[in-house]
Length: 168
Ligand code: S3P
Image (cartoon, rainbow, N blue to C red):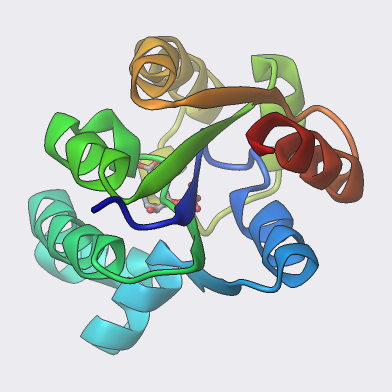
């Protein structure tokens, strides 16, 4: 039987965690951020995991964690920006509830991520170019993973309302 979770998917900076927390409150569900779950499990920040063990190790823990959360019920889950790019993770979450893509133009994302130094994938000399390339590569994959796409270029409460309208 299908579990009834809501999984928020989208690029870094798309508001998955902020909108997810609000959405959970509104719907009387529990909120879990996949990155925070991983950080608790590993006892260190995502940046530290990348630095110490590298990206493949992070992806392995991310996959295990996705399976663990997908097995639960009544959760709003904020996925990481790379989670739903992986086909196996997309399949895991598809059987666990509704996958909602928070869709934002790359310009808005770029503005939001400008001063950010918490995302290991963007810690490179030409951060803006790397971000745009990753966005182009990932957007089609997010779209094929998602059940619903919501225009997320608005305040969190508005995005929350759009999600509720779309899923009900
Ligand atoms: C990643 C996004 C991050 C985090 C990790 C990798 C990605 O999550 O999982 O840094 O591959 O896009 P956020 O989307 O919450 O920043």
